[in-house]
Amino acid sequence: MTAQLLSHTEGRTLVLTVSNPQWRNALGPEIYAAGVEALNVAESSRDVRCVVITGDQGVFSAGGNLQRLLANRQQAPEVQSRSIEGLHHWIEAIRTFPKPVIAAVEGAAAGAGFSLALACDLIVAARNSIFVMAYSSIALSPDGGGSWSLTHALPRQLTTELLMGGERMGADRLHQLGVVNRLCDPGQALPMALDWSAQLGERAPNALASVKELVNEASHHSLSAHLDLERAHFVRNLHHPHAAVGIQAFLNKQRPVYD
Image (cartoon, rainbow, N blue to C red; front, top):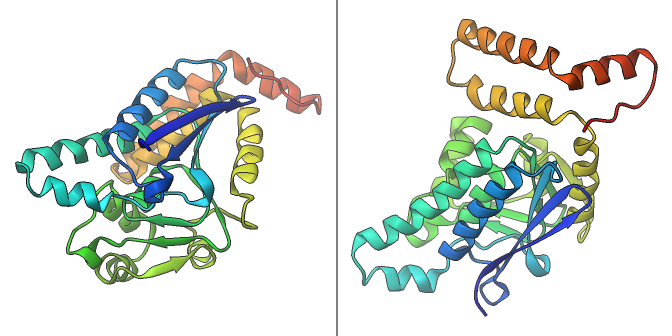
């Protein structure tokens, strides 16, 4: 069965499902390209307020397809380089996408699958799900921004342990560390993520886009530079029509409705 990225909508949420059951939803170039294309379309769609990324048949993603990696060893290095570039284009597309992206994790999120979950803005995970940076177990190093994401989320020593030792870590532990946002019973990650996305979809999309950009940029700026960026976003959002709707609804103790 060909690896594919399935898509459907639930209300105002676009659901992207990594589907490659034969290889435990291993990722590959077809999925990367489809992911970038789906986000490009969703960015300009007023009907899409959030995106949820999940895996087919109870597994988020086992990461790279080892058979494909073995075959790529017989090719010029540029072949694997182009494949990783495809993954990285998708990771960057997720990080810069101006709407919330939620990972709904069941089963395993391994290697690039773990990196994919970390690229999302929020993570919902089943309590029995397992996260592992398995690269060093097969004499490889991380891709998909995994080392970057973990370094920004965890102490250096813990990040090093996960990456060097290939340690398996449960959702409960990652929830305690603040990497996983919400835990759920097995089989309920997607429903919980959809419920959360529906709640976020009721908020002003321009304000959420500003929050995402500010969070993404915070680690690159001095406090002074970041205060300037916050000021620019605040003023722009205050003069957006949504601010009139939100402020008036709050004063009237009503529920705001944004276009």
